[in-house]
Length: 247
Ligand code: ATP
Image (cartoon, rainbow, N blue to C red; front, side):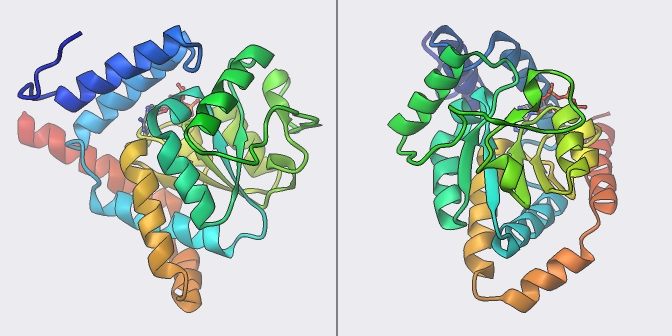
């Protein structure tokens, strides 16, 4: 479909076209489009920009990633489709392992998502073999890699579902989420929820990471002072302000 660059929602329309192509290629699950639409609605309420509270959360997430001993970044079909290069670059910068972890898991889809990431430059991916289990989840989604999520102390979960986010937190991991819905169970279960669109949040976390690399005291201060509850409240307020302005 031809999309005019003058269209006010050009970027969003191009992304939608790309996501539906990726459904045809088997990288994104059909229900992934619905999750994407939910994200778009919340982003509308943010004015499709990184608001100060989201930027603050991104800085705290960067601090946690740098302080981690075994950090892992999980990748599902939507995250790969939207932001493969950004996630690969962030993983290199930390450095952290990338683990493919799908909600709708089949060996074929895992392979497709892994290949998609490898074509974008990823190496040393985890997720083809998922030989460990997370406690607290009854389904197949409990599966994870023994050298990845299972061993991790800090896990960045872009676009994860609430059950897994809660199970990761219950397993004692520091959960860093990227999720545009400040009310989601994922955002609430996280130690740090970055309520921002994935393709803005990931490079922003990397930018903070580079700034914080030689600032250990600043990192520890950010971690000690960050309150996810307060930050989510600021995010909800930011969304309410947009609604009031337009009303
Ligand atoms: P819960 O965490 O309570 O299970 P949920 O049911 O909303 O919440 P899912 O539908 O599994 O969770 O995941 C979709 C989530 O990802 C939504 O909260 C949506 O706002 C968020 N999301 C979708 N696309 C993006 C994006 N591009 N950037 C950031 N967040 C996004």
